[in-house]
Length: 150
Image (cartoon, rainbow, N blue to C red; front, side, top):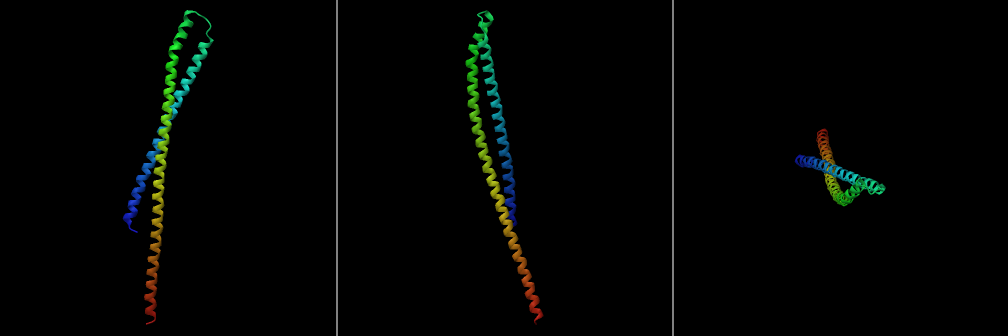
């Protein structure tokens, strides 16, 4: 086995390791984006529930109550639309995360294949080396043996 082949595989392994690390970083970024959006959804849900509860407890027809109810009726559709948009963004973010995980899995598989090939080639090299050493020993033994019988 040539050293150039092992050097090339080692270079490939290093590049693949970098690719795995980069893919892992992308997954982490995607998960952080999902978490951020989930927080926005949770806050939006709480805000809608709290404001709805507040408005439902208002009984009077005074100016303050009427103003709050009017503001709520104007605010609610906007808040619901924002919540809908956040949920759609979460679906997209989840898809990006799944894509990033798939890319990371592919990168890991490629790295593992390279590592396996390196090990196999190293094993073959060791076998060849052992055979060469045994051949040298046999040659020496044969030379020494033939000199003793002359």
